[in-house]
Length: 389
Image (cartoon, rainbow, N blue to C red; front, side, top):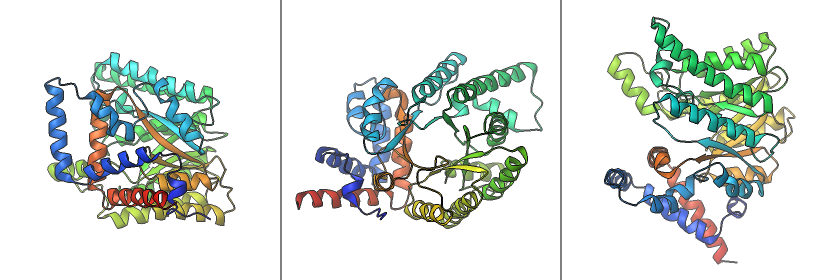
């Protein structure tokens, strides 16, 4: 019987010291003031070239990341696999701008695909298009009113070539691949290129997955339209379904530029559309493959109920659940314990270069209502349970 409050199962992979470290970390990031001050101190220390990498690596990096290299993640991959949880290796280095860096990132992503080949422990690979090409190129390619120069057109073609190489590698090795969603003003080209690759490679099973952010008010209609397009093309539309990650930036840009916000009016509406999207895809699962990326207990439980109603076996490869490493273990491990397909996002990269990701993760934990409190409560309950043995 699925019970997300079962902390014995949720934390069975964790030692007492792991739990105490996690408790202290979530306690710290539950305070917006401490997070803000910590970010300032960290950035100052880096600017002054103070030796703080060791401290970061032993705390927030250890909680939310797998290692500095692909090979360094092997221990975490094996640890998760021992409890029936898969790994999604996510190269989380941001802010690169040179073609040399973009080529390096492309090769690293292909390396994660090679590692996943034939491995039940690594069910997906993942990448962001803005990680392999300049953001402004994606802006131009997404805006039909733009008339790019010959050089810009050549740069966009080079970016698309890197994108296609990654998709080709995934198809060649039969490794499912997530293309992450990004800001609304570059999403059109992501959606278009991803659908092209789906038409090429998703004829027998879902290899290429688009990411759909349900904090956008237009995405439920988009998903239904894509379902019709997939049916017409005779393909399986792969979806990683998430709530989203750019809300404040989106609202600020819309306000600044004077256009209607693309973001839902409130969290309840996002939750409603997320759950309606689950209902739609399960009801039409002949044409969809789904990975539900969610830290929401209600949505996760709903998906298990919908699968049962449609007689979809928990082990069906078309359905996965995913959470971030270091968070929501009560969802991940309890689902895996009941036989569902579950994977954790495992970020990796050099400590200093992954720091922007880690600081954003701290911000998100602070801003999401109830997130840190829930983590603290679960850890406390498990430590008390262990003491009472």
